[in-house]
Figure 1: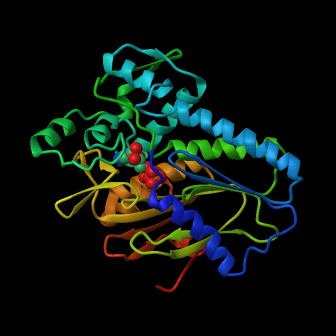
Figure 2: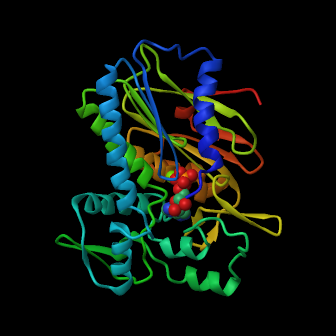
Length: 340
Ligand code: ADP
Ligand code: MG
């Protein structure tokens, strides 16, 4: 997978803005590491660590994340690829505890988002050409193909667990956890860090991030990238066991005849979303934040508050296609907008 533009900018901005504001003096024994995973750069900051221990923890963490990255890939050979092939034949397949837990959570997220978050639309995402490298000869789907896709109506409610086996009543359901897996992995990363005795950490996977503790007597400061121009739109104060997820229509998209086709699909229309530029959610559960940010993009400028409320995404911020910033009251107390 190619490195996305956002990945570079989000990480650069996080560090750049913090440095510019003079808020991140380098305390002794800060360990920083960076590697490539989940199609993006992962940045790890561990505060106040013995260097040898920090290096060992960092290596263990990237290995654990790599295993998840391989397992959860929706279309490459591997666990999720096997699950999707089985779902498509109607033959239940044995799944592990993680997948069983995940099915429960995605079903709740699907329901509370009113269907906006629906990770069983893997076939729609594939049909729109988002299961591969950008293709120069890409053309949008025609109306008949879109209508046929839409009428397949896969949902997490089609999935069922029979003991340790997962099956689907709808053969069109295919899992694509692109809007959730990074958050799930960040939760796991935070657990692993805590178990390793780390008390203060920030792990940033291309703009989706989780923190442990604080940055040394003050919150971590996290920049939210402006979706339409270089630089940040705001910075957020984040501490304790919290996560921040940002979804955008600017990160991956196809372009055709002057129009942009985003990688987030409205499951009800089977078409790419078009009127929300970005959504950011802060929540203790990184998987929830990831899914909720994706759902708010689908909900769009007119319905995002309603969907945020129904999901329990209290701390949320959105930017619409015209660049207008809007946020919940809880986000107001965290976000420090930067001058345009
Ligand atoms: P990012 O990849 O920028 O972190 P998201 O978290 O919003 O952005 O994830 C987008 C991905 O989620 C898409 O690439 C696709 O794999 C998946 N996806 C697209 N539309 C939906 C949807 N309506 N519900 C759930 N997942 C979706
Ligand atoms: Mg998301």
